[in-house]
Amino acid sequence: MAYEQILINSFRYLGMTNISDIERMTLYEYNIRMTAAQLSWLDKEKLIHELAWANQQVQAEKKVGKKTVPVYRSFEEFFNYQKIEDSIMGVSELSKQDKKFQSLLTKANS
Image 1 (cartoon, rainbow, N blue to C red):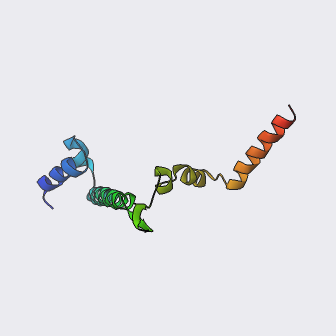
Image 2 (cartoon, rainbow, N blue to C red; image 1 turned 90 degrees about the vertical axis):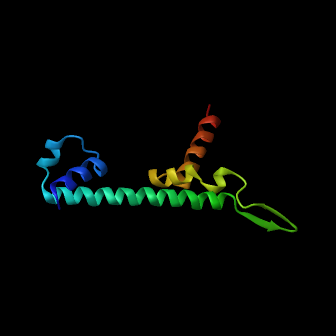
Image 3 (tube, helix red, strand yellow; image 1 turned 135 degrees about the vertical axis):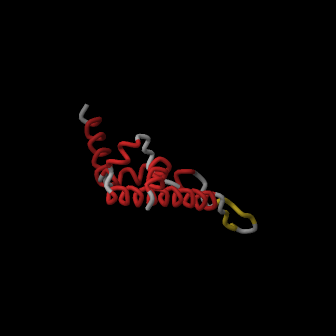
């Protein structure tokens, strides 16, 4: 690979702005960074396609009797942020119920 092409790719795809930083990179590091840049681009493309898919899904309708109605009546039905966040944070439905029960006990004992 030509020296100039490495410089151009580093400026264009790697966001590097200092020639001396580019020159200090080994060829192995350059290849790893370029692979990472390509994967980052792929992630962005996937997000674009997921957004297009979600846009199609949110506009979906189903037939109920003789009329059509939206499949999702609310944003939360389409994307339950709280449920996903609770799953990531390890909050279970049982612990939510425990908190409600504890709150009721506190009120009863006040």
